[in-house]
Image (cartoon, rainbow, N blue to C red; front, side, top):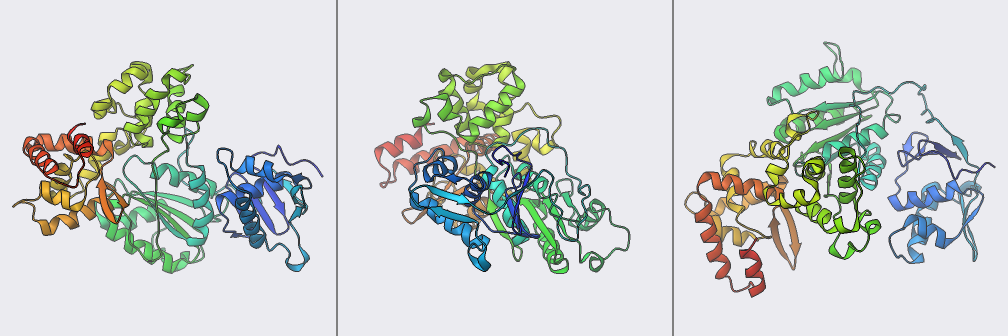
Length: 494
């Protein structure tokens, strides 16, 4: 049998009734996706690419967990999961065998197909879609994207949630790209950002799908397609109704939505996007170690695109980490900062962090307006808050660290802001991804991203209330007995 160790990432490896699409990190049994975790897929890929050979347990662990120290039991758990998923041992079929004292071997015949296989009842044709061409690589989202590719055809409706600049659209489009071959009747992006009137949503969807006048949902019942509903946050009620209607009427339709808050529709699976990984100070020992973190990978990638010959050096590690940390690991913020590397250099970028909106005001001309600058992205969220929510967001900006509901009440409540309303507003701001929630010791705390706090603080200063709120904040912190001297010092200083 020919070696499969150097197969292209675009290849399909076929064994038994299964097809392993490497680029999509998707295993199909016919047209049914197998539900496998990311690590199990990594193990399977190593074994299949070495089909017919014995792979030692140490080698498997080294390839699947290259940066971690794990026990052999972890490997055995994933091998067992693979065997269950593949029906190993049923009907006399065997895929993975344990070779005592040596390791594991994938023993079933494997066929290397350079082109994606056609699904049942599907002729090979150019995929139908309206997805934009992707101009840059994506950093730090491989595991997340792979998980979505595997889950979406099964769950049918998933919503990516997170603050502005976190990369919801980028992730959704990448997932859509990888699923092009799976959906027979196409993958369609429906961008709702330009629509403010809920009554226009259905017409916009109809135009996007290129449907003829008079076409009803019943005539689309057998369409096997994926809709990407992008930027749903300002049309939540209409999107919720639309999604529920579509999923009930079109049993072969899948929907991937992006929003700064959940749609709360029936059958919704919500996935909150985390920021990119920022290295801790303990990782600043070498360039190789720091480059293992996705925030740094993105910064370096975009800096190289801007400044030919840019190289990350050991003396740069502290500055790059600080830039990524102060920008909260937000992909949009990191990209906009890295775009100015040729004008400011690393030292200049780091010096501008206290005024991050000036630093990030140079936009991407090719992006839609709300993504051209970080301020524009935050304006998009702020302008869709009601006056009370805007006032609370501004006032909360005096908190420099995480804070409890009681602390918020003690500092910002008053005649214009009754205590009874503040709790609901805090929850709404967290739901809209303008505050994040932390839980520890049975206490719920709220926290700003640095970038969001800077934006809200600017709004508070323009309102004329900054000095008053700073005095109330200082008084509350100094009179709170539960705070240690160190915590008080940290709260009173930037």
